[in-house]
Amino acid sequence: GENVEQHPSTLSVQEGDSAVIKCTYSDSASNYFPWYKQELGKRPQLIIDIRSNVGEKKDQRIAVTLNKTAKHFSLHITETQPEDSAVYFCAARRMDSSYKLIFGSGTRLLVRP
Amino acid sequence: GAGVSQSPSNKVTEKGKDVELRCDPISGHTALYWYRQSLGQGLEFLIYFQGNSAPDKSGLPSDRFSAERTGGSVSTLTIQRTQQEDSAVYLCASSLRGLAGGDTGELFFGEGSRLTVL
Image 1: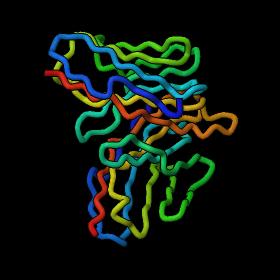
Image 2: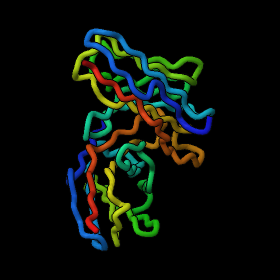
Image 3: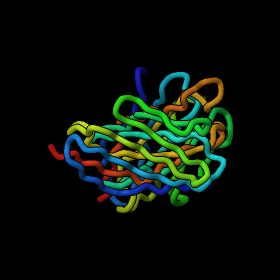
Image 4: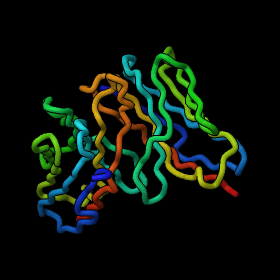
């Protein structure tokens, strides 16, 4: 089955700096890679996803890149703001509804004002 | 309902007792997941229901854990003979369908059920 590893487990950046979170996956047939954000005491929510037919996707200050050959994908947050402080989870699965979504272990991001 | 509803929101029980956690997914969502989140930890997969297919139970940590989904809607996660290590937040999530037909596959999470085993 799929296994997703995520690094780093914690990340502290100064407001305005960039933050990068990296994930690797094991199932070479996985082709859907979402990222979820969980603020303190709240439920996880989808912030961006990428499918294997593209290598990069951007949405304002966040972007995700995918390297299928190396089986890794990354989340990039530019111009970080205090409200970006949260736990971020990457995930992977095949685009077949019979396959489940497996999450990485999470990265706690702290943006220092 | 407007979102995924879970109950109870908090449950305190004594070691050895059985507990039932309920999840009411978004209407029309055929996929339903249970995840467990221990304090400060990640989202540990427990079980996945998709339509009328047999559920994927590969994440259940022991035979004390079971789940069912009646009528393709409401799901109940049952933990028998609870242990202290079962203490965690149990999150339910649903999604519209698989990723075919343009469906985004986005998971919508409930608020979770916080279980404390004394």
